[in-house]
Image (tube, rainbow, N blue to C red; front, side):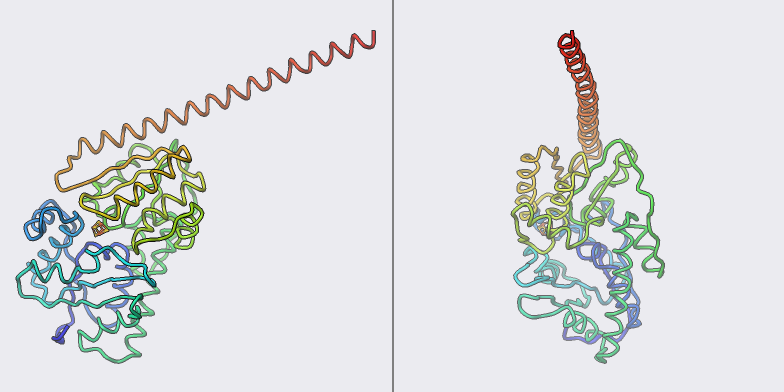
Amino acid sequence: MKKVLKNNLVGIPRAISYYHNYPFYYGFFKSLGIEIVLSDKTTTKTINDGSKYVVSDTCLPIKVFTGHVINLINKGCEAIFIPSIQSTGYKINNCSKIRGLPEIIRNVIDKPFTMIEPTLDKTENISFKDFCEQTANAFGITDKQEIKKAIDNGWKIYNSFWEMTKSGVSYTDALENAINGKIIKKTVDIVKPISVAIMAHGYNLFDERISMNIIRKLEKMNVKVYTSLNVSYNDSISSIHSLGEIQYWANELELTGTAAYYLLNNKVDGIIALSTFGCGPDSLMVDEMMYHCKEAGMPLIHLTIDEHTGEAGFITRIEAFTDMLLRKKRMHLDKKSFDSKEHIQNKKIVEIKKEKILTSSIK
Ligand code: SF4
């Protein structure tokens, strides 16, 4: 960040931290008078463009991120926001690819643009306030009061976004309302025949191209869907602790915290683990939750997506899983009603026997 930018425009790739932090980024940059240019939504072209620049066994989200940077460069963005989020708590680190994101992009894309690359590293005492100051300084803004006001504005929009999603408002609706300064809440929880929780990173699940719009597909199958957006940070942490686990990586809570929460409160009929090809941390985290689900008798399916995954096979697997959940639930309900009928029958037999004994003793 040696060069101080003279214009007030920043490009934000619609990938990785965008999916969790955009409400904050929006409020922060808006307050500083910096206009945001977003990259277009992910398409097959975005993935292909990104894949050309990185080695083939890089994880899919990083290929997608690279494709979004290319998209912003093609749009003529001079400054692109590529943060280095090293750790979000003391020794709560991100995976090496998220930590080294500016380095990856610098080394693979040889095109002229300025990288806005603030660092967040709580393990090394580089706080979130420092992160925001580094960002503002890159645009020549150094007034601490102005930056503080922008941080407050960022949190305001971020908190209203999360308030909405916790009540069950969808990701897209919550985002749209939050950045328009509105808050809507879901008051009625519609009951569906079966419900599932999806454990996945937000940058995989809410990117409709990467996730193949799995949420919409499940809803069309009349399945109630829960995600990490419906679970608070505290509930995620306490749930993984209740399973005797600890948090290993910064962004794993979207997976383990969500699965642990729904496993413990018995609110869903099954869990879908959605991960992408090439992710080291996810392969361990999914295995860990598979173990706990098996112990608890909770069905879990693991779907791995890469740039070649076909939609037809993907739908077939979801359909097979939801059919199995429905059959399992029906069998359980039938057994319960059979058991209760048998119980009533047995009770009657006991009462008749008691009556007979009583009558014979009177005689
Ligand atoms: S956590 Fe996994 S999917 Fe996400 S950037 Fe790191 S390696 Fe890629």
